[in-house]
Amino acid sequence: MGALATGYANSHQRSEATPPRRTFACQKSTRRRQRECRPKSNGQGRTSHLRDRVRLLRPTAREGGRGATTAALMSEQPSSVKPFRGRTRRLAAAAAPAGKAKLTHPGKAILAGGIAGGIEICITFPTEYVKTQLQLDEKANPPKYRGVGDCVKQTVSGHGVGGLYRGLSSLLYGSIPKAAVRFGVFEFLSNKMRDDSGKLDSKRGFLCGLGAGVAEAVAVVCPMETVKVKFIHDQTSANPKYKGFFHGVREIIRTQGLRGTYQGLTATVLKQGSNQAIRFYVMTSLRNWYKGDNPNKAINPLITGTFGAVAGAASVFGNTPLDVIKTRMQGLEAHKYKGTVDCAIKIMKHEGPRAFYKGTVPRLGRVCLDVAIVFIIYEEVVKALNMVWKTD
Image 1 (cartoon, rainbow, N blue to C red):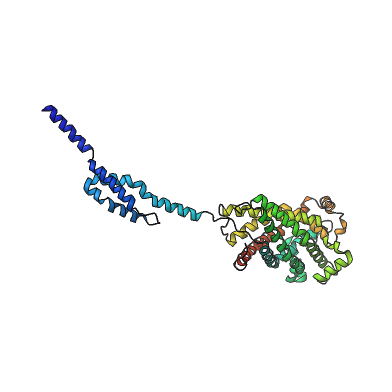
Image 2 (cartoon, helix red, strand yellow; image 1 turned 180 degrees about the vertical axis):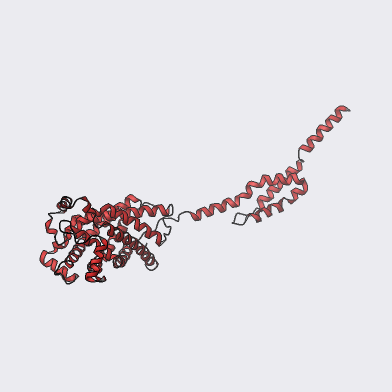
């Protein structure tokens, strides 16, 4: 009897510890029904999926009790997360960069650059005038101006506020084609040098900017800057001989030939090439940093202006000495110098190294504002052209 009682007790404990065989069978059939009836992941919320599973599990709960329901829920937990995994993958795919970066057609760049250059020079010319005056005010002679404020004061008192805009026509006629050539050549070169995703790295941006600067120096900047400097210098003399821009051009060509408009070509090429190389290098680096992995990410105009101001400041500190040499070589007293190197040697000998940074303060303010305005207007005009001018 004792052995029978012990066997009965052991079998009873095993029956309590082990769920009924038919409960496992019911669970298997329930999971089979769930696989057949489970809705495909279509972005529905988690609540509807859990409600469907509870409804399917109700027969199992009646047959096997709470333990079976809990076991079934635990066994189905991984599948209940699948809809959310699919939804997460779809959201991640939507947030990923959409294909190749959009390229700017060189024709759009030429038009947008010309518009931006014309508007910009009308805003910033007074600072350009003051900068040129200070650079022409050599220390070899008694200095005429004691600084930026004194230059503005003497100009306004002698010629009125309009005196700060003397020579605007020469610079305006040059700024429009200069910016057009700059952006057109840059976009043409950058479109050839971008990688498979359409991204332009900073080193290639430097090379594209260098090419754009050299092109604008030879085609536009050198002749127009020569006329501008001669015109401004002439207006400061006791008896000005140029009555206007076109009259000044005719007189320069008549007396000095076409070569007279290309004085200081080497210095201009060096100055403009390094200038645009630095600017586009900084702009490309900042744009790539801001856009990250999405090359088509839109940039707010204020951010574009900030990036442009930083690029302009970098170019000022990088090539102001070349700008001083260029200005001296294009002035009315350019005959004192045998060439670019001779000009640099004489400035160092007679005026010291600080002379190479004369006019840095007014140039810094003008260039930062200049580059910021140009890039803002350029980007906005390109956006407008993209809406009416469809290109591949």
